[in-house]
Length: 288
Image 1 (cartoon, rainbow, N blue to C red):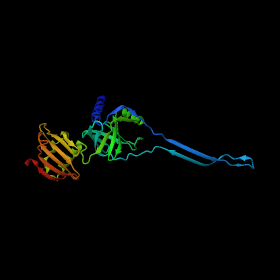
Image 2: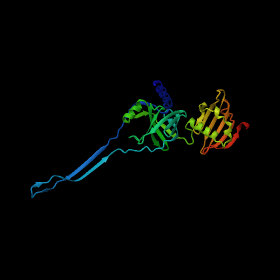
Image 3: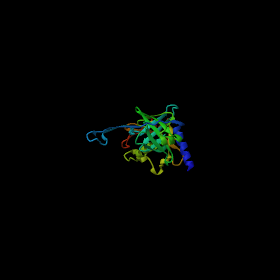
């Protein structure tokens, strides 16, 4: 079990190291609440009876001030490009209903705190697939972007204990329109397209020889609205490439036959409607 945790920590460290580095030192600030109250009393006496009545409280007023609790209403969902302001290293973060994918293939879960912390950060707690290692991503809105700080290891423990904000470089998160968030997302699109019996290409696939595990990510050419996957034949010999380019209403899938076809020798290109996975255009590029 120690080996599993160690491997996971190393993996997440590699993914995050380029974007957010924290030190053991940190600064701590805490808001102070003050409550002030004032009371006024009046007493009356009857001199003729030479008796004094107990003091009668005629008015009581209280004034108080307390720190405002802000709800974390920022929309975090979707694909974001994270870039460190100091080192310039970048990575892709895909937030999708509690599931986080970093750089298309590394999977985690996340929970967004209901309220912002006293410093105005939206706090996102990130866990590995086993839920045994936790990190925090602290975000603040800056226009259409977010600025974030990561809290890992001892810095996370301090933040959890007393709200100490870790020191480290600021990470800028920029929303990516029509971007692919994960390799699984592209594979799902491929499968749904070939399972649509209204498409002629649905006859071109043998599902008995299909294994989802035979796909792998190709880093070269993968960015933003474009993702490239390699398919290894079930025999282990040979393979092919598929390039997916996502637009508002359609996705263009370009097929490269053979292990040496990509990127200069495309074979076939299909334009697929995003709404129903219907192929609306096919180009046989090998004839050109």
